[in-house]
Image (cartoon, rainbow, N blue to C red; front, side):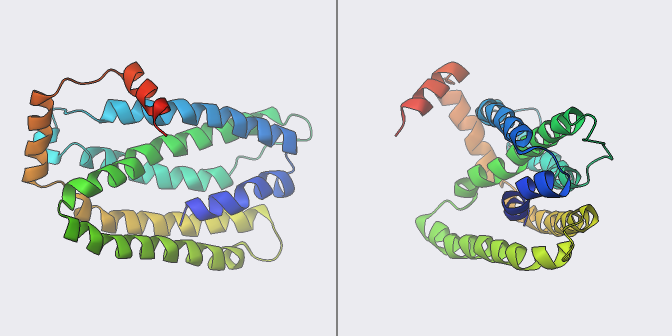
Length: 219
């Protein structure tokens, strides 16, 4: 619901609708990509540990709660840009794009990454995982198709900023609804919580640099 309109409309919106130079957009995306390359593994490493909330709330669930709302809202503000006169000075919009993309990605890691990681912990048997896959992939494909179909209707035929803002608002509300619906199913039960502590007690934790090196060696 969010990733599809981001992939389809982001560059077009900033270049054609807002009038930002394509080279500036490319530079902003390049800087964001560097941030993304550092942010994702670092946050993943920091979240993969027990905290004082783990026994009661789980290791992953608190991060999902923290991340889902700002992740959805930051998507809206990527399109609901402030009124900036780029003919005189395009750089405020340049930095705005970088900041909003970085915030959106950060909160996506909080929410989306932990949903992906907690899945094998909740669905522990091979049979449960096989039953999950068709539903998960089916809903993912369906949401992509829905976003592709209704996106142009929400934007309208004029390719105006207000049309894109309206589209972003509708998808933000839909994403929030689906995130809230998904939260109970991602709750970590007592077995999962106990496993987190037993693993930590019996296994020495690898430091971040070593884990990055091992990840780069993986093919």
